[in-house]
Length: 108
Image (tube, rainbow, N blue to C red; front, side, top):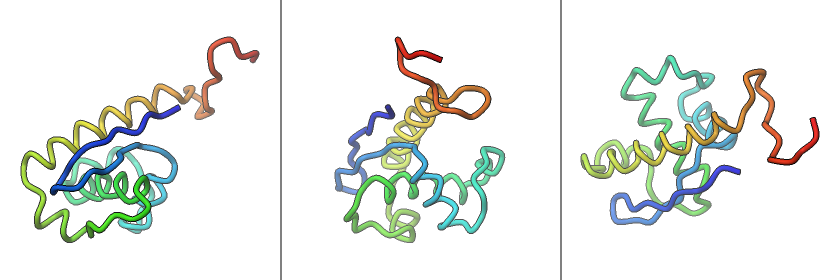
């Protein structure tokens, strides 16, 4: 199970987790399918950070435009670290064929 990480950005406590809801939110924000190759653009990386916020916080009052305009370097660093950690956890939970790994002791 992917652990949510509680962080504080722009003076607000938010939960961060990379999950399927994050992918869907990213696609809605950008209008493009998620793929790691597109993350070399700053705008796509910020869209991923914002997707992690909105997908895991029901009533957040930070807009994408506010995140872009008001987040300082510390906020972006905290977001980046939480998203990378969560994305790494998510990747570890998936087999190479794209199926979710079974927990310890599960039968194949």
